[in-house]
Amino acid sequence: MIALLIRDLRLSVRSGGGFGLGLVFFLLVATLVPFGVGAETAVLSRIAAGILWVGALLACLLSLDRILALDHEDGSLDLLATAPIPLEGVVAVKALAHWVVTGLPLTLVSPVLGVLLNLPAPGYAPLVLSLLLGTPALSAIGTFGAALTVGVKRGGLLMSLLVLPLYVPTLIFGAEAARRGADGLVNGTPLLLLAGITAGTIALLPFASAAAIRAGLR
Amino acid sequence: MSIWEYANPKRFMQTSAAILPWVSVAAVLLSVAGLVWGFFFTPDDYRQGSTVKIIYLHVPAAMLAINIWIMMLVTSLIWLVRRHHVSALAAKAAAPIGMTMTLVALVTGAFWGQPMWGTWWAWDPRLTSFLILFLFYLGYIALWEAIENPDAAADLTSVLCLVGSVFALLSRYAVLFWNQGLHQGASLSMDRKENVSDVFWVPLVVTIAGFVLGFVALVLLRTRTEIRSRRLRALEARERMS
Image (tube, rainbow over all chains, first blue to last red):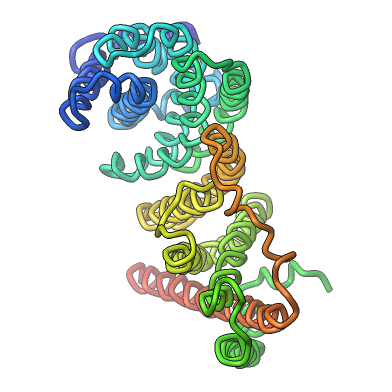
């Protein structure tokens, strides 16, 4: 499983793997928003936390079809499905690899983009913390969406349609935690609920994803 | 005799053919009776005026929208556990009806909200969770359409329905939490049952019964169509083989 993780990480870092694409997309979203809503700092600082969360979510979505589609195309997914390690483990490792190359970098650059969007000073730690807790859930849910559409030709759009409604609770709690933090309020409750969603999705969704892949490959 | 006998497509076709006309007629009669009674023979509400009458469309549609999803969840589980094809096809047949009901509930709600709340749409927990439910229906139907192999499609949509149910429930309560953060909508969360007097209540129950029967009739009809198209496909495959 560790070998699989290293393989996935290598593939995504090398050219054509899409590493960095999500980050650039995140930067673009943060750059475009002021053009859309105006450069007034008061407005920007009020919506900064929410914009960064939505941007991170969309950046995650962008790279989802690379989790399984490329492996499905060249046949290595069939090999993995018949490998001695359980398919649930394969899916979990793939979600982890996706998080390491998208969720984690997004979390790390979010303070910089917070500066661009004039995020209030008390908001940085809650923003980073909420993204750190929430992005693993985004990767786990996204892997499930990718597993559902793995057999579908050009399933990218369909996958977005399936995955976005599933992202709602994570987005609500994550953005709420970040926003309360930026307003200087106590944000323990949304953070705990967010952590709960992440723990639950990591624990349970690999089983659903593996079932979906088995059905899709049959 | 057990309920699983109806999982046999032949048995299902016989039984559904026998009861379909009765259910359809009863559905039409009850819906028309309830709606006519509600629209023309009940008094206006003293505060809402005649807009109260949209309740006869809004409440049955909203009830069905939620319960159809639950029915799809049950039939998906039956498909995953016992592999009865009729069950999977019934879930497929129910989804567009559920989506339409969600849309009806949203649109009638908007028509009522415009004069009453002064707005077509508010990000109230109930409204928002219904919009999310609508998106779930869309995704479910789109997944059915996208996959060629019928068994794989049934498997995948069933898994989506299970996972989607959990997330729909989560969203329902997450939205409540999110709305509390904005502290909005005390006037929107009124419990309708306590406000509705018997004058409105009886025709409402009649209409709900009519809508539920109408749903049953439509599901039976659509499931029969699906079974027939399955049989047709099997026949065509056999022709090509020979």
